[in-house]
Image (tube, rainbow, N blue to C red):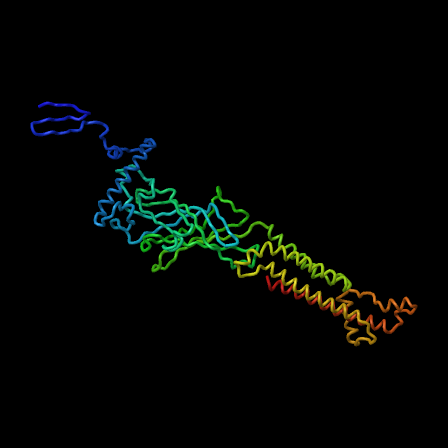
Length: 445
């Protein structure tokens, strides 16, 4: 018999038989068998530890493949939910931990909010448990989300979720030797906000709610929350002059409905510049309107009301630039705009009343007013309209220029009594409008 050595193999040539026998080499050593004898994983280098984790994973995948042969699934540890494991519970309880917000973008015209952040998910999978005596490892890092089963979440129904701008990505995935899996899932979600609080603009609150549900295996996935509210990432989050607060996530308790995770983001302006820009002109016009009865003569009050009306129209133009663009998608009217509209209406009515009373007071009369009117006007002008005064009577001034004293002229006294009566009527009228404005303000608020 003749022996030939060719490329590390022993070739045995017989009369009717050819046999190849591999040479005994260190390259044929099974690395996973080698790692089973490791007692301290801290001594492994980085690439050795990665290989060690791969050995543990493929050991678990092989064991799951053997126990799931009857289902005929390919790679069952990744394609079948944990309910297919031996002695597994009928449902998968996915615990939603801390939800952290990193960035948001609010469109005030369309009333929609896009948020970016991450959340912590935890669930149990018995197929990912191992004996710590065999594999000296407590936590196994899964390097790909395709290697194991994970709960896929969507914010809409199955038919429409892929058409939205929502996106989710698994950043970190690991399991303990007890089969407890944890995942850090980043998300980008978009929703429409509730604008029912628009009447408090610019202090209105945007309430934007999100709803997450399982995209697959909806009948076996159940959400569980830990009672923590939505947080903001102090490292990356910027509020952009908005006060952001998140609610505590809740779960739909009805077992007959697909499990849903609900949480809301509330946004309110934290900058006072817009509020000052809108409130200061309104308050100035309103306060000046209330104090017009203290300006004295009716004619001066009329000029003041014309000036106030001009300021109110200019303020209304300011409102049209700041608020009108938001009114198209809101059903409510902001309080500051409602107060301004109410003040403009009352100022216009008060201006018309002042002009009419002033015109009536300028009519020359030859008969005296009723005695009760004279007495009432004297009391009102003495105790209420103390700052008001009448315009100088043109007729009395002409008589005095002709050498006839105005006080001895009966017609001049009658005219003065009528002017005093109209002055009292005007004072009561404008005071009534001021009281109506104050009451209307509290009613609108």
